Image (cartoon, rainbow, N blue to C red):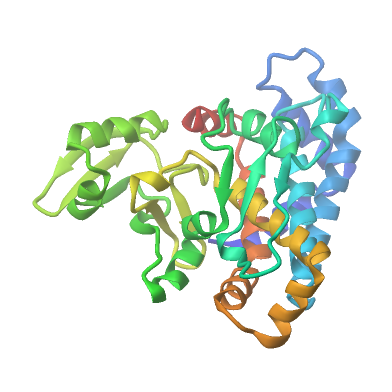
Amino acid sequence: MDTTRIKSYLTWLKNLQTSQLYLKECYSSLPDPRGEGKSYENSAGFLYYLDQGQLFLEEAERVDDRIKPLLCFYGLTHLMKACLLTTRPDYPESTSILAHGVTSRKRKKKQYTFYDDEVKIQQNGLFSYAFDHLFQLNRLPFEKMKMKTLFGLIPEMNDFLDWDESRKCVEIGDLYSKSLHFSQELLDAYHLTEKSFVHRLEATGLPLHTTGRTKKHLTVKLKMPILHSIGPFYFHLEKEKIYFPCNRDDFIKVPEILIHYLLLYNLSMVSRYETEYWGELFTTKYGEDYSIISHYLSFASRKVLHLCGDYLMLKPEEKLIARRESH
């Protein structure tokens, strides 16, 4: 996937004239007659969100891992706000949505591992607001989520976790392809008949066209390629592959960008407030937490930039399709 192209596109957007015209085009697809006026009003904030978000993520590439979570998290939040301005001309409508929308539990003093930690979703805040208005997902499929589940759903982490047989996703096709392939083993793991499995795929909004069957695979033909990384379909940047959860318990309709939001929020909280744990982690390099977190931080800033840039590059009508797919 061409990250250079995304960076060039973001640079192109970062001037008042271009950002105003871009927002005007985005608002033209909304049932709001104030579109042109709001595009002028929001253009400065939009480009500042882009500029600040990209700056945080680029700096994250250059700093020590101990500082990366904070830069990555705030880079992500700024870019998410830029994305929200393309579909919500009045964002933020109230102060209640300015909070992060996530809480982390106080860690226990002994035998704590980040891999087994969890976060809790709040009713108000940026996370729930983006879940609802950026992707048109009206009901959160969970109230709490463990870090090990979130890590397993990210394709680049999935390959890494395969060393201890903890992988939670499997390749099902090429990016930009109109064909997806689900093995018989995958269908068996879901404990569903083929008809029920296909129905579950359709319920995600997947633009399904036809299905075919061999002894080993169920092949699904699509009307169009998947336009954006919408759960439960996730993209591997380097391999340019689409991944899908191996087990039905991990089948959650959450866009990957929000998975990174939860991981980076918790990592940033730990790095700021759990100084003893965080310091020992990088000093002693003891335990699997160090390897898992280090591997994740090695690509997190690039993946976040790509996912947000990928969304911004969608045309207004494609955003509508992506939002309908996730609904």
